[in-house]
Image 1 (spheres, rainbow, N blue to C red):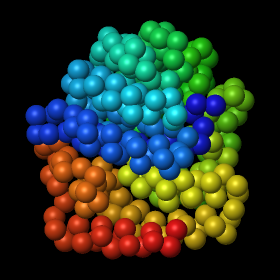
Image 2 (image 1 turned 90 degrees about the vertical axis):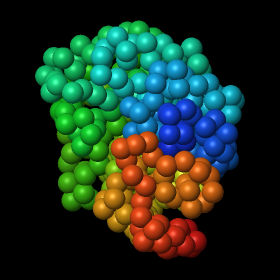
Image 3 (image 1 turned 120 degrees about the vertical axis):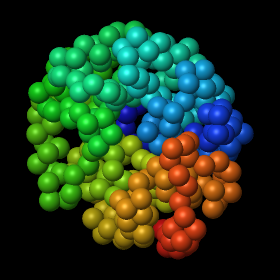
Length: 296
């Protein structure tokens, strides 16, 4: 049941040299833990995994393991350009206390289905930790289709997928098509915060959430309403989140949550360069978005 429920993905606060601020990371993790999410997704895209060295990734995992102390399961992103690097990162995550792994097929040269399968098979075989396939075509420019997912689901430790959610009109059919090609126990989850609640209503079992890493309490309320199939409460809460969803779509969730962490006093750090911080006018819009969540 690891890859079920609300998985909160915090930023990884770091200085200009890429050193993790463990104090600020602890503050974020304590908020998430207290809110009652179902897991923490450390070192996902929101957690800047591709901007961190192997040693800093490990330090972040050790910090999270100590902070959470087994209360909230820890899923760790291990994506890397080379298979041997991803294998080493998987073992680091295991040794540092992770309960599960998440991996996107990161690449510079476009990959084939066979190359992605071999990459996953090698990494999955490096530890006994359960692994979720991170299907993130917007970032990796590679789509893990259902035919490839069927092959990946046959690997013993690959037990879940993190798919991009689709608009409400399309998600039910897409979810059923994926469900038809994987084992019944395979956990089909979704990212894309502005679409995720409807993906849960359509049968998804996991919301891999950017906003829950920063604002876990209202995110938990939205997820629990979706899990309960509450078709009145879900649109009400989702509507209160809409100012954030608009900013996510317009500016990217990565930039928005870093700036929001600054506004809330949770982290003094900016995104790693070359990503630039948001302008003052955009931060005013963020403050308005925060105020809209007062009624959740």
